[in-house]
Every structure is written in C-alpha cells, then in structure tokens.
Image 1 (cartoon, one colour):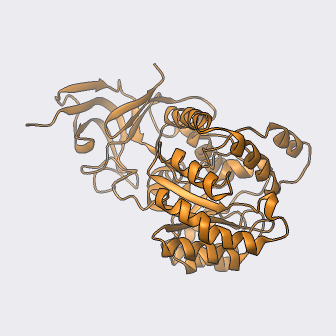
Image 2 (cartoon, rainbow, N blue to C red):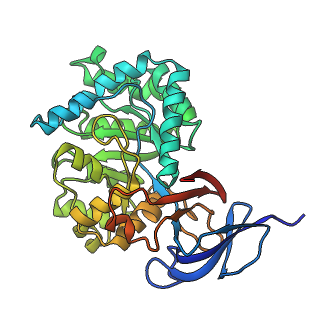
Image 3 (cartoon, rainbow, N blue to C red):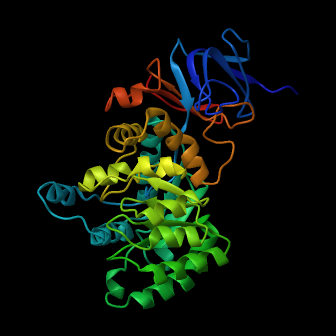
Length: 392
C-alpha cells in the first residue's frame, strides 16, 4: 500500500539546516514545497507539488522544530516570590530547589501529569517538537521514579537528576545522600531514564560527588549530562568532557581551558540564556565557544526557580542580542545543536530522510525570531508530519 503524502506548499523560505540541500549553513530553499510521508521528509520540490493532503504555507517561512535539550517540566508549585526578591537584589542560590521539592512530593500523580501536560502543550505552541525532561524535584527513590514515569508520558528523553540538591533530611550528610542516589535511587530510576545528570556547583555537589553519580548511572547504561559552571568557575565542564557526557549545561563561567576542552570533544555546550536573564547573571560567552569550534545548543531550562519559560524564541533573541550569536547560529543551536546534545541524528533538519518535525512561522523569514522579540510567531507546529499545535 502506498504511503499518504503531506505537502506543505507555497513555502516562501524553507530552512533545511542541510547545506547540501540549499544555500548557506541553513540550507535555505525558496518558493518550494516540503513533501512528507510516514513522518519523514521525502523531498523538497518546487511549489505546486501534489500530494494526498495539502497545507498552504502562503509564502511564510518554515523551519525545523525546536529541540529543547534541557528542561525540568515535572514539578508542582511556583516560586514567583523568589523571582521578585531577586529583582530586588537578592542573590540566586541553589537552595530554592527545596521549595519545589516540598510541593512536588505532596502533589499526587494526577496533578503532576496535569501540570506537565499543560507545560508540554505550551512548549508545542512555542514550536518545540523534541524535548528532554529531568526529574530532580522528588529526591527520594519513590518520588524520583514517579517524576520519571510522568516525564516518560511526554518524551523518550528522560533524565535522572537525583543529584539536584541535598534534601533537608540529609542536611550535613552530602556523601550519605550521594550514596543513596547511586544505589536505591538509581535502582528505582534507571528503568525509566535515558540519561543521568548532576548539579556540579557550590551549594550542590562537588566534582567527586558528581563523578560518582554519573559513573554509577553510566554503569547502568544511562548517557551522561551535567549541570556545569553556572554560578562560578568550577570543575564541571572538565568533568563532563572527561566522562564523555553528551552535554555540559549552563557554561556561564568558562576558562580558556574549558573552552578548548569543549571544542576538542563531542560534549555539547548547552547554553540556557533565560536562566541568566532571570537571575541577572552574566551570559555565556557563546562567541568564544563558536569561534573555538565547540558545538553549541540553546535550551529553555524551563523550571519554576530560574527560567520559567517554554519560549525557544526568547532564547534565540537573547542569544543574538546578549551572546553575540548570529541569528543563523542561534537557530542552528536551537535545532541541530539540541539534537546533537540528545544524540538524535536526523532531527533538527528538514532534508530528505529527516524526521518531519517543523514549524510554520507567521513571518516571511526566520530572522523575525530575533527581530520581533516577544511576538508569538509560531503559526503551527508539526511532529513527524502531524500537527500538534496551531495558533488558529
């Protein structure tokens, strides 16, 4: 039986992210039709192509769906008062996580599913087609397992973040808590996780503790990721590279050696600019990373304490305005960069053979993502060729 084809016709400007398919690093094609079958891009043809189903892009721009490789969507409660205090001059610290832990532990499964579903739907409306979701607001074996089970309802990219912060019941006994993370918590979490992560930071976990968590998770078959160098210079980036982690996330405070290590490795530097915006922190030096040859991703870091957003468009605008990235570099980082951080080849592109995850912008060009900051430009979002969100 022949496959049903979807034709997205009259695309004024198509970003394929494949230089072999079109112009420049974004592989741009103009006045074309995107042809999809069985959830996969099968062709880019001149406008007017025929198919079983037709969507008229009406001359608008079509881009690959955003790949958000760092989020914390499973939580209850909110921390608006903490944000207000920071805007009044209070310093950001990791300890606020415990507030969310308390709220999440008391929420039942149905409530956590309802809250996560709403945030995932919001992310779809923001053009995010692939998403990673971490645990880290349970911090007991049953609660971490529960958070990962909820996350697994919405993505295959689930990350065990038991080493997020030391919970109150282990106050003053960080090594004991790390032992618990590496044993009974990992036993409960590993069947529901694809990745393992740790918060390698002053006030959370040091390099030896983070190494213990990551190596224990990797021994169980999980891939490594690491929160690194957010609040100040530290060992996180070097540890992530040493262990072959897929990504080092935040990367706000980097030395020359850190940048060189990332550039010489397969570890992606995942930058989270809304966290820096929301905490009034310095922005990562994306220009130095890119010029050194490092692979860079952008992600929302959606969480209730330091980056309560699902807007990848905002990340792109901040990257261009504050981090000296070109709009092309920022768009690549929000698509192919995120896919690389999740080790997902064939995602973040719209070349023949790629997964048909794409966004129709209510704009003639991708440049409007930075040119018109704060304006909702996502007209429709498609995952594997199926519409999952629309502004209609």
